[in-house]
Amino acid sequence: MNDVIIAGGGPTGLMLAAELRLHGVRVVVLDKAAEPTKVVRALGLHARTAEVLDQRGLLEKFLALGTRHPVGGFFAGIAKPPPARLDSAHAYVLGLLQTITDRLLEEHAAEAGAEIRRGCEVVGLSQDDDGVSVEVAGSGGAGTPLRARYLVGCDGGRSTVRKLLGVGFPGEPSRVDTLLGEMELTASPETVAAVMAEVRRTQLRFGLMPLQDGLYRVGVPAAGVAGDRSVPPAFDEFTAQLRAVAGTDFGVHSPRWLSRFGDATRLAERYRVGRVLLAGDAAHIHPPVGGQGLNLGVQDAFNLGWKLAAALAGWAPAGLLDSYHDERHPVAAGVLDFTRAQMELMSTEPGPRAVRRLMAELMDFEEVHRYLIERVMAIGIRYDFGPGPELLGRRLRDVKLSRGRLYELTRTGRGLLLDRTGRLSAAGWADRVDHVVDDAPELDAAAVLLRPDGHVAWAGEDQADLLDHLPRWFGAPAAG
Image (tube, rainbow, N blue to C red):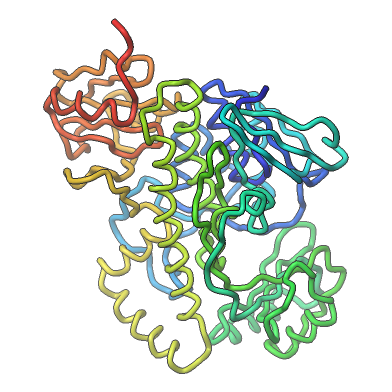
């Protein structure tokens, strides 16, 4: 029997698989697609995702294939210089096609020992006190049901796992649709640039971006809201909308992929039902403005992986696995509000445009601009761990140490006690927590206890206080 079955082999599922393998968990990833998609859905990675990759020693592979862009302009497309003093060593957006992100994460998960089965679609599930049975259809997996101790649905916004669980997915329906596709065009790059500069003065949901092999990614507002968004638009509809919005269809031809998306916001009522959990788009959907979707899913996986591994290993304290919902559900709710607000600011209506002008003025205040960008980049998140110092609940940026960098010490996926005093001890948890004594001049505390996801679980210098906090996140001390 497997320890964990993951439904969905996108970025969320692959990141989760790798995190579980870091702790020796037996994991199989089921993806209904027979082969990796060539469709480019997401275009970049934000600062917190870059930190996550750095914490696991993966970032250099991604940097080598991407382009670093300044973070100014990522809130509702309001053009501003990047704010100063962002609390991250990775204060940029890494431009990278999702097809490349998918490939790198799949390679990482496979190298870590995850089993990845394609052509396998989850069509049924049942659970009991000991595990979950999963019915699988498709060319790669029809036949005997699979069995695991846990199942995680990372199978997208139309998640089969969520539907089989009967978990509600309330929210706001789409009010506007956008047509999106990949195609070739005959217009010159100069024509494309000139038309884009003019149209995007008012219509921020319009754009053309060169990809690879002569293809362009083209987005244009739809004429209305589709009743069934799973049905792709006809190419004639696409060209008609280009002419209506831009005055030209740019000579588009040979479409490789056409789709439509809306601005719906929906959030699963629960992220866990017994031994089945939800992550990524299976748990939340929202408008793509700001590019937060892929990043939010990868960060879900980073939060869940070590907790699920702890439950399987038997040392998880009571409530640790439920803290996944408690922490990530509010984060997703905030992203839904934040993207909806940005969609309002991108409207062509007079009222929203007046508010947009006001927001542009407010963003000239450095603190306002920094706050908004940190929301987009997900580096302003603070989980509610109760009363305590300002650092408590926040992820810690990559501070310099006498022996190198903090993130270089987090690649085992274990907890970390970073101790400037040299007087503290986590001896009873040495199998789960590394103790590092270092002067760490950039650290704004005498010592911090970091969870495996890099969030500060405790800060201070009192040994008795530390011993009160260790069991909350790392269970009972080892015997002896």
